[in-house]
Length: 212
Image (cartoon, rainbow, N blue to C red; front, side):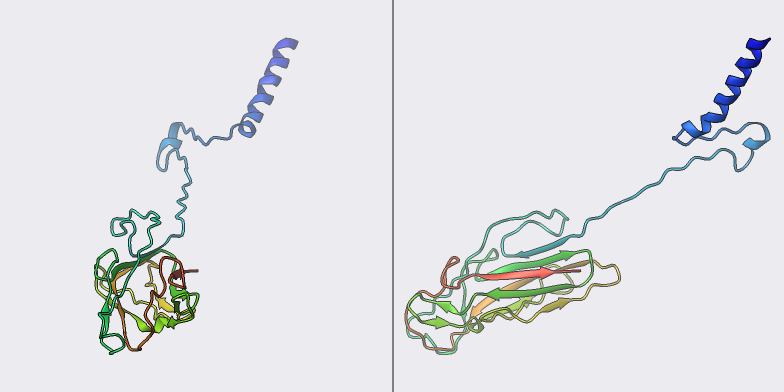
């Protein structure tokens, strides 16, 4: 009899502790309790979407399919006025660019609100001998590529350009692209030589996009 009472007491104490030990959710109903709403269990879900900002000028990955990757190819645009036409004010088309003819693919894809875009040069294009051509002599014309709204191009200058602000819709998503056609204005008569180059003599322009 004493053993039976002790065993019952131990089993009762164990039953009281079970809800404190169990951590996974389950719910058992019996009898009339199985009627609506019956037994229930719960699962919590979270989806974490990273902020994405994609900028392409020239060669780069696909962006219309969502396959956004980094490509480290830097294009060279070259202008070569014909002898006898230097400084006559007739614009000169370029060579090079991923679309050829001095034309580059430009695109921005983002998912966190407005985007600010600008371009920075270290100074005027130099021939290394003290002669220079200002970046204001290189113009950029934006034309439609695939997006309904074409991506505007910053106006190049001997420093940091004015900002181009892309206003995001209520969805906070921006997908804009354009063909950027570069031309040399050819408005000044300058000494012969090679101005700029592949990251030499201030030949490189850095485009920068930022978002909140």
